[in-house]
Length: 296
Image (cartoon, rainbow, N blue to C red; front, side, top):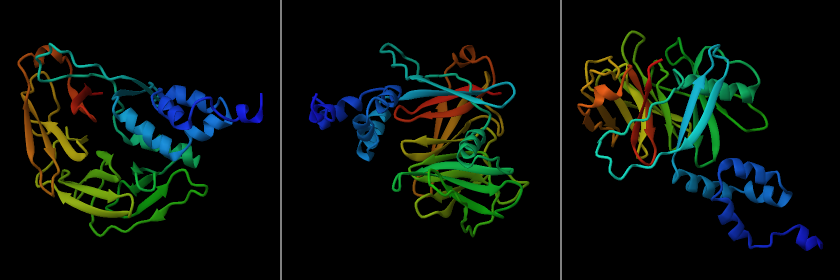
């Protein structure tokens, strides 16, 4: 074979990229190891953007659970089930095991990068779509806004840097990252319930705050609803989770510093579907289906 044949594909590059973008992620990983030409093509930024765009159009369910010793977290994914044409139920329920808090996942990601354990802090992992980098926001859990630090992952020299926050508050383990902003539930003092949401812009690394105007239920979960921050919570007595006796649940969506409320009434067959106390695991982006899991 000539050098030209050894270092080129028999099809145009743009067509090869189109084919690769339709493969599953495991196949992409194998193809990167096949040859230098494929590796360089699949590591290009434009291919990554195309692959992520195509992947978001094919929703996947991500399952995560811990072992009994709490030393490891196991992940697996499966294709999102197609909606049945004859389905008349207004509620689609997916039940799976999930970790007790998202803090464990973020802690694991930071330890892998830093090679050391972290102090007792709240850590939030987010992605900045402008710089295309992952960042970690960290603060001491037992103190009121005492120390905020940011770490950019994937850099050659990892180092924490201090960021300023003028609003005193306590952080929590209820958080989510949406479109370059980390949101987490917060409170003005240690003894009160969460009643506001802290917003940390990953690009400019600055804080802002939005008042919720009332105490959040213990069942509250922060979700991504059509690219906007949503608060899912039980519609029954404050503090209660979803159970067989539940009548409804609520979704509050942040729009221009306001919180429009959506109330969903559970069907009578609900008590026959659920056998345990449930918690909100999140919302499937793209389909807006609400996922619940047994409360561990």
